[in-house]
Length: 517
Image (cartoon, rainbow, N blue to C red):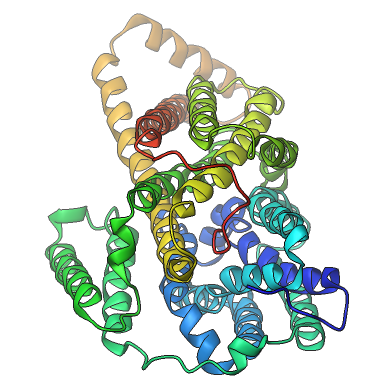
């Protein structure tokens, strides 16, 4: 790969493509703190509002494997500008959506438009800088990709509280217009893109990919609402998912020029890396979704306050990036990954000790440390996964790697939401089984509350109001324990990842590979 001889400074090119990438990555998390507001505005439950996140991730994942073909067929610059325009226009329709179905449709289009932004931006960055400065280019890229998701909740919360949740999507419009203008002005296609003659597009492979990822999204989104396998249509959807996925695998193995070549899984490091990045996606997207919900649902924080409380994770990531950049060339990446997953697991256990009496600063340091640990997972895992591949395998491997990561994120969000709902009901049932109405302390508490409320309202209604307040406290305690369960299971998942890390073969420390992001 030769550096792109641009007529302008490579830093202008870097700013152009990073605007698009930052905007796209930011959107994976910016809506997380606004979910209760979106649910209320669109007459949906909080469970249904999480579809706003999962539909985006799955649609985003579908386009990733096909992005390289489209760039070769239509020109990388033209395709990138088109994707930015699609993303920007669909962002307007997300913000203007009057109902949840229209919102989800706009999010699917937005996710599809954003799917190619990351890999194309990284390729352009790598080619715009001379070889001796590509490490700097990768640091710029990693900074944007790691920091954007953790700054998203804070920015989304401020926009939601100050204006409306709709502005969490409208903010993309000026950024998208500026990005499209700068890319059109400063980015040029290299000769190998202009002269490329890609093979015929794999229509069957792309169609099967859409079917099984679509079925997966529907099952994840509607499973909890319709009692999973208790619903006949869910069972049919799972059957369609399994059949289409099996056909996709067979086709990808046998086809001469498949959309996704699975031969890359013969490389042990890449196979292990895909498993780990999926588990990482489950963990980080669960954390990004669940922690703001805890502050809002149980502690009554506003969207901005919740975003502000979890925002220090970005500070941790910023602090961690230069450290991992320094250590990455000196220490075996497996040790760095082990450190990252262990620290992430320990902080998840700390989150698993939360109570309803915590202050906004109680979890400050665990949140900062979580962001720091993310840096020790994000970069080394891509270095290990790509480290034993040949250069000609990188493009295909990048699409698969990021497809798996997004699928993991979608699964993580849905599973976390399901666990919150189910474990909350379980704990509430357990509490009521151990608290009889005839118990003296319960009667005393009810009488005390009833007496206090009798001075503030109609005495004849005070006992019912007192019982309602106690029931609400019971529900809050049950939901708190459900959050505790989710955080502790997240910790177990991270500790399990440590065992998988040591299935990697050792890779000599080197610069980050060209397709990882």
